[in-house]
Image 1 (cartoon, rainbow, N blue to C red):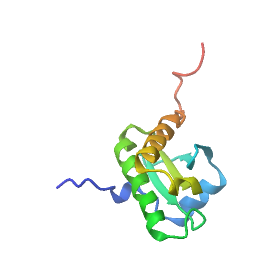
Image 2: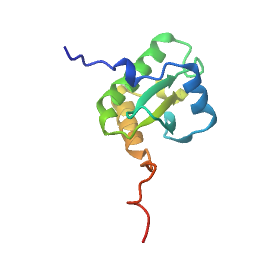
Image 3: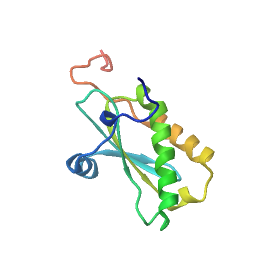
Image 4: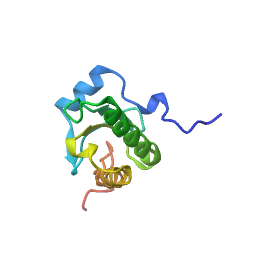
Length: 126
């Protein structure tokens, strides 16, 4: 039976993986979100969330933001390169409606730079 949720293998769960993303990774962002990314060896995109109390003191607001991020990632993950992504929210994310946040997340997924594969010579000039 196929579920609509985010499977366990599509999530970053280990503290070491989060630490690697904080230390050696690329980053980009938008108005409400900041994204860190790093190529992985598992062959598919994985998501990690870092939504702090600085974003909102209310857990209900932080959980709403997490649900929206997971939903957006779930829809886009098959089109993403094999990277680990850590999404961090900014304070502005609490004040905007879900449709605006989903639109920004979709734009961020498209902003993810294509990664070079080892041994790939198709992007090299002759």
